[in-house]
Amino acid sequence: MAKKYDFTKGSIGKSLFYFSGPILLANLLQTSYQFVDSLWVGNLLGANALGAVAISGSILFVVLSFIIGLNNAALTILSQQKGKQNEEGLKRYLNAFVVLMTCIALLLGISGYMFAEVLLHLLGTPEAMVADAAIYLRINFMGILLLFGYNFISTVLRSIGDSKTPLYFVTTAVLLNAVLDPLFIDVFEWGITGAGYATVVSQGFSFFIGFFYILKKDLAPFTIPSLPKWQEIKLILHIGIPSSLQMAVISAGAAAIIGVVATQGEAVVSGYSAAQRLDSLLMLPAHALSIAVSSMAGQNIGAGDWDRVRAVAKYGVIYNFVIMFLIGVIVAIFAEYGVRLFIQDEASVRFGTVYLQIVALCYPFLGINFILNGVVRAAGAMYPILVLNIISFWVLRYPLAALFSRLLGEIGIAVGVGASFILSSAVAIMYYRYGKWREKKLFADA
Image (tube, rainbow, N blue to C red):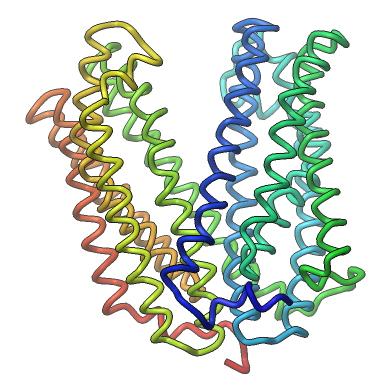
């Protein structure tokens, strides 16, 4: 492996800066991917087709959550093996991930294809949208193996310290999808079928060129797949399952907050929805830092260098606080302009603006959660992270939003959410400092 990918030596602050940048750009591109997809479907096929894609997307998000869970396990295990300089261990676990993910993808793909309409009816999909939604869903389930691979190769490269190469693969998928969407939907007149194939072909093409590029440049030690050992599968599931459950906790928590927002009327719901669209974009730098920190900490945990692990956490928190504070100030000043990009109703704009102005100033505290949880995740302590997420959403954010909305009205939602960011960061700091995550040993030779 190239030495420049080794985070167990050299400047931590400089490495974190240069490593997290491409991850941020990749996340932005991935967000634009979904935006462009919706743009073409909505404009070329109409509201019903857009609704069908959105409903199918909610089912695919559950699958993606599971993929993210397995990828978090991969980032933890592979980065530690990289830090241990264990080339043989890296090969074995890469093989185990490939075999396990292939089996899971095939199982999910077949099941999803067969039960697509059943899943849509369970979600209460309007009858007028079921046919289109089922077509789109089935095509995506047919290509689920490509979705697994598309995400996995980026995780593998980041685990060994390469964040630039995955950026090229994501860029390829985004640009190809932007071209294929109108071509398949409108020119070939394939309609919703074309939208589904555009997604699968784009991700599949990116996956294949990425995989062959990795093999050609020998960036990761992939081997011909073979039956992995049970202890390897057991470790992957031990880390991957709680990581996937974290996504379920987050999704359910977000839905619960929507329930609180809905009690305040339509204008508040619209304003909150617009604010959330901006919110998800504005938190991308903290997400990128979290991924970078997790990879860097994982390598140093594997190397047994806890001084550097602490330094990674320190730089991560400092970078997060500076960047997210600046973003928070800018958002507080220009919040109204951002909200008006999505809605024009004055009552909705007023709530969305005030909500962002309050919550944005608490962004640095939410970012602390991302950073410190990323370090703890790098040690493989996934169940404690699951508990911390439950505390963050179900002990703090949802109850505080509900409480303050009753006490202060609609503005109380922002106060409760902002307060939960601050309190949950305090919980994350306490666990980082005093928790037993450092005692976690993933490998028998550790």
